[in-house]
Structures are given as structure tokens and as C-alpha cells.
Image (cartoon, rainbow, N blue to C red):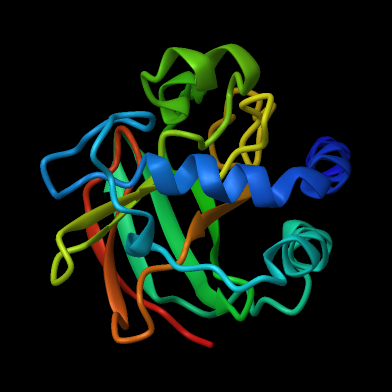
Length: 204
């Protein structure tokens, strides 16, 4: 847990660049075909943000990154992959235009599991966020938009990083922040590499 708090402290410092991070992430919102961040032709209207996004992002980061006010027994969804089980506890919409997803991942196997695949395959993110959950995405099937992890101007993701190999029987807590889909969207599909895809209801 101490490693996670160190990581989240660094994220809070990076949150001053939230406006730029949101703009970058919005540019990465592709259609359901899975465009990578930075592709041309993406519409900024796919994830609207209020003028106070920077201020909201900073407080959101400090509060949710530490996992406070999240019921560990809450279960929005449970997905499995490679001997691991991921329980999604919360997917909360913030008024600043973000969705913060809180989850825990347990190794139900008898051997240690490598966590490197969770960072995805995007080169820029891999370089800055090793052993992270930066590869996670949300898909709004109705709006036909895919939302990638928010990141700052140095490509550091607003998510849990520095996750060590998960020992047998152990659990690690993770968080991820995404641009929020329109208010009319109340459910999205969540995907993290090595896990199955699941539908998640948005609260807040």
C-alpha cells in the first residue's frame, strides 16, 4: 500500500496539468474501432469538460487515488483472466468531466503473476508508466466512442503505476481516470489487458 500512496502523491503533483491532459485524452477518443490516442479526426465533443476541469481534477486525484470513501465490499462487476480476478468497486462521474474507476485485483493462483501487460501497448505510455493499468479503456457503445486513460503533458497516466508482481493469494488496489462520456451515458464497457470485457454502471 505504501508504494501505491507514493505513486498517488506523484499523480497529485501532476494534476496541475489536468487541462492539458484532458485535451490530450480527448484527442485520443476514437470510434469503437479502437483508434489509438493522437489519431486525427477525433471529436472533442466526445468527452465534454467544464471550465473548472483543472481544479476538479486536482481534488479528484487526491481524494480517489488513495481509495478513500470507496466501499471495498461494493461490486459493480467481476472479471477474470490469467488466474486473476478483478473486482470493480466504483465508476464515479465527477462534475469536472472525469470518471474515476476503483478496483482491486486478486491472484487466485498458486504462482506469482506479472503485471506488465496491464500497461497496454502504447509506446509513449509504456515508457512513462511501467507496471501500471494505463492500458485500460472505456467504450460507450451507444455513442460509439472509446475513452483512454487520462495523462499529463509528460504522458504520465492518471492511474496506479509501479505495481509489483502479484504474489499468489495477494490483492492489489488500483484506480484509473478517464474523460467522461456524455451525461446520457450511464453504462460503459471496461477493458484491461489480460482480462475479459465487462459492462460497468456509472454513478454520480
